Length: 253
Image (cartoon, rainbow, N blue to C red; front, top):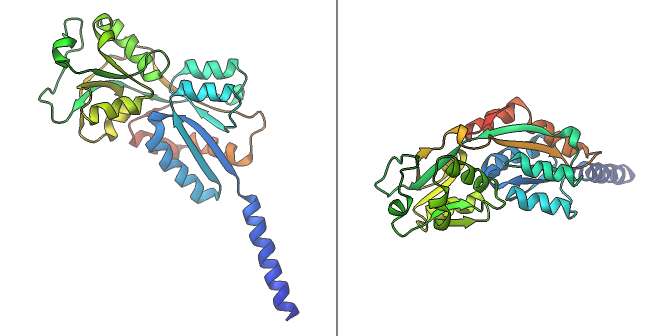
């Protein structure tokens, strides 16, 4: 009987030790990373035993939340501007900052639309093309995809015509959803979003020189990160993670 109690006690201690060894990693990430990071987080959880909690939103929203004291462990931004802001606010570990991924900007429409190609140049009549509808974009005031879209449209001589016709979304996935639901005839999104969307097709790709490079920096937020956070950070920079990112359409540094 004593031996049985000792075995049961030992098993309890072992279980408690395993539970206490598990850690939680909270990740703030740009909306365009949703699908890839969900897959990578699940893989990391299965191999490490740690839990990864993902919070997706516009890079600007997440950077401001960090500045206001939100307790994240990692931050992945869809542009360098908001990572710069986080660094200025001293809410990231600047030594851990690394440019992880790159993306492309595309024009999309619903699969049911007859148009298959759009000439992205100053002569494009956006008003006629929209025919009473809207051009969905992330809000150019703060959403990275919208900031890139404004730069590209301005570079091509289309911004003045496009600005009053915009449907401004809180993040790039919301802009994509407007096109998927046929609430906007065209949308400007990342290539990676268009690639995983249902009932949406790419009708034009913006020249890379028409906007700043679409770069995704990553950084730890703590000067002394937890072992789990450091582990997930390293995993996202690994060759295994790179293959997953590439499958979702990202290019990897």
